[in-house]
Length: 215
Image 1 (cartoon, rainbow, N blue to C red):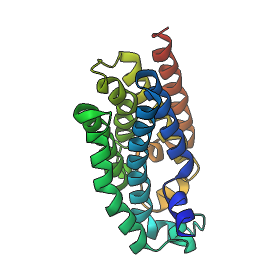
Image 2 (cartoon, one colour; image 1 turned 180 degrees about the horizontal axis):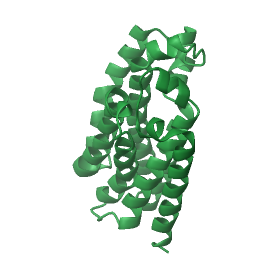
Image 3 (spheres, rainbow, N blue to C red; image 1 turned 135 degrees about the horizontal axis):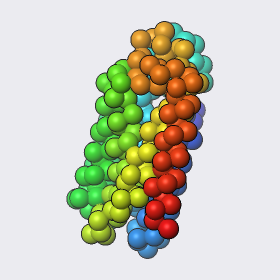
Image 4 (tube, rainbow, N blue to C red; image 1 turned 90 degrees about the vertical axis):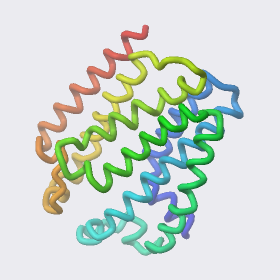
């Protein structure tokens, strides 16, 4: 039951997507075993972001009766999730900095993770809320290129940043009214539903143009 709760608390869908994308990029640069190691390093960072998010949002999730959240449903206790987070933190630092990503690539990815955690505690409440998504999604492919001593091409980091910000606007739409009632005032909440849909569409279009420039 606790394992299932940990899976749910890491926001399984986005975590699986990000980890899979990182594995695909890693296979382009590294042999399969090294690509798996990179994917595990990325996974560890995603666990940190997801678990810290559920811990921070617990009272808000409780007030809105989000029973699909494992802390609210009772699948996990806050104490157990904190313990899992504290165990994962040093492991993530080690496998990112000592593994195939190396010091430069690992540090860049950890910077993206740091921004993800800062989003949970700070950025989600102000108009700079897209910034952590831009940094995190730009860092994800770029850190893998850097691990092979290559300069990330513009399409890679720019496309990542644009698609990351689009994901932020899309992700917020479903809980926008509940977020507003909780005092969460990120840029999507300020723009409203229509504005957020428009912003997401524009960012996706720009992201596609950035990728098209690589062809």
